[in-house]
Length: 470
Image (cartoon, rainbow, N blue to C red; front, side, top):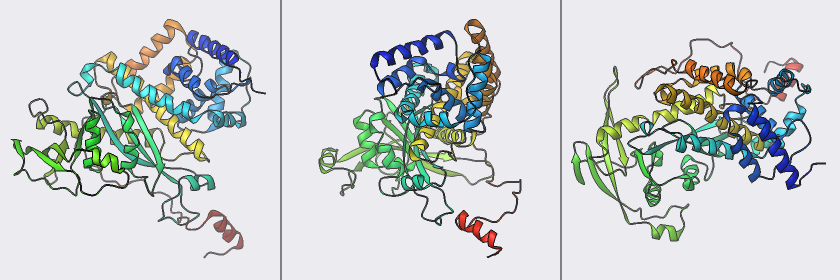
C-alpha cells in the first residue's frame, strides 16, 4: 500500500536530494535543478511508493528516452540497468512493464511545470544583456502539428484530418509554442485538436494571455495581426512585431509619415463583436488603435524582389528604426528553426504513446528535454562569448548523449572538468549564416515502391490471406 503521509514524503524527498547533491546520479540529472523538481513534485499530489521507479527516477528515465535516437522503453530501462550496475547498486529487471506503469503515475502537471520553469529560468535569470534585443525580451510564437499512434483513445481526443479515410489516417494535434529569442528555450506551449471550433493557433494564443510580462515583444506571423489581440496585449504593456494580415491594405500615403516606407496609422475597432469575446470586454476596449506600419524589402539572389509590411506597436522611430524592425522580423525565422529541431532532431513529429494523457506527457517531456539542451548551449555560448542561436542544436544533442554516461558517474571537480570539456567541444560547431538560403523540398533517395495503405490494416491482412489482389 502506498504511504501518503506528509512526513514520509518529506523524508524521502530529502533523502533523494541529499544523494543527488553529492553526485549527479541518473543520466541527464545533472542538467535539471533538483530544487525545481522538488518544488514541482510538492505542488502535485504525487504518491511515493517503496519501489524502484520513484517519480524522480521515472522523470529522468523518461528524459533519457526522448533524447535517445531510438526512443524506445527498452533502451531507457537498459540505460537505467547499466547505471545501477556501474554504481554497484542491485540490478533491476530489463522488462519495461514497471517503467511504463510509473510513467502513467507521473502527473502530467509536474512535467509541464518543469518545462515552463526551466525555460523561464534560462530566459529571465541567465540571459546576458548582450543577448537581448535593445534590452527587450522578445518571444517568437509559432504553431505546428504532431502525429500520434492510431488508437481509439487518441482518435477520440485528437481526431485525424477529415481528408483521411477511417483506418488509414493518424490522430493529429495542434501545438502552439512560445520561444525565447535570446536563448531559444520554450517558455510556454498550448495543445488542442487539429481542427474544429476554438482549435486554431489564434485560440491557443489567446489561452496564453496570462503568460506575458510587461515589456515583452511578441514576434509572430500575420495570423496574430488582429485588432483585439493587439489591444489586449497593449493593456498588458506588451508590444508586437508581426506581419500585416492579408485582409488589410497598407497605404503609405495616409497617416503620419515617419520616413520612407514608415508611418503611423489609426485602426478603428471592428463593428462586430467576435464570438470569443464577451460583450463587456468588447465595450471596454478602445475604439481606435495607433500602430506603426513599415515596408521591408526582401532581396534574395536569383529571385524577384518582394516586400512585406510589418505592423508594430513600437512607435518611437528614433529608438526602433525601420532597419531594426526589419532585422527583428527576420529573426522570426528562428521559431521555424526551433520547431524543426523539436520535430526532426528530437523526433517530436511522430509520437509513440497510445493514450491522450501519455501523448501530452510525451510532448511536455520533449519540450523539457529541449530546454535542457538549450541550457547546455547557453552555457557554451556564455563561456565563449557568442550567441546561443549561433550553435548547432544537433551537435549539442550528440555531444550530450556521448558525455552523459560519464557525467552520470562523476562527482566534484572531475564532473565540472568533464562538463567544461563538453562546452568547449560544442563551441566550434556553429551554424552558418544563411538567412536567404533556398532548397527545393525534394528527396534524392528513392523509397522502396510499396503501394500506399488505402484501407484498414486488418482488412488488408484478410485480403492477403484470401489471395485476392483487389
